[in-house]
Image (cartoon, rainbow, N blue to C red; front, side):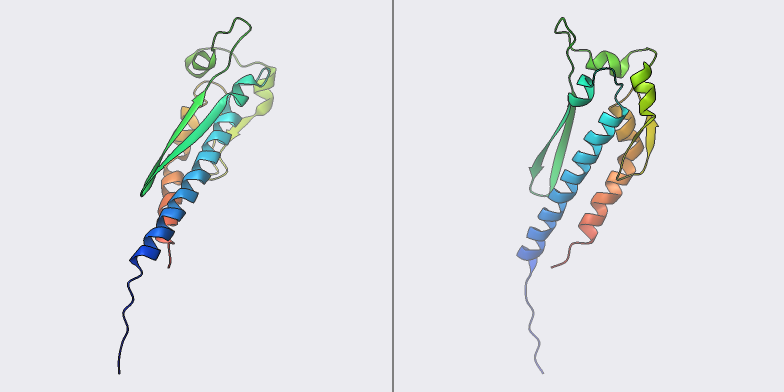
Length: 138
């Protein structure tokens, strides 16, 4: 009787990197969509101004989500709308709640439109990534 042992480390690592990259992209898209759904709405500039990018490394990634929206005087009001104290207008109220498709979490529209979705969904994002790693097969 004989046994053959095959080293699949390279194939496994390649598949693992691919799974991590795919999970990172899924998380990025979900986070951007969740932030857009939680952003206050008047004319839609703030929602459109929420952008995300991802930078991949060997076995990981970094997500950067930013918001920018200019008023008629070219002042960026994204930070004020995130941190400020204000009453929501009709367009924002009509949105209801923000929502994350990956975590199934909801959060209020308005102040904290970038941080609330991340805080509400963070553990789900970690589990999603963990599943991508655990489900890596050669």
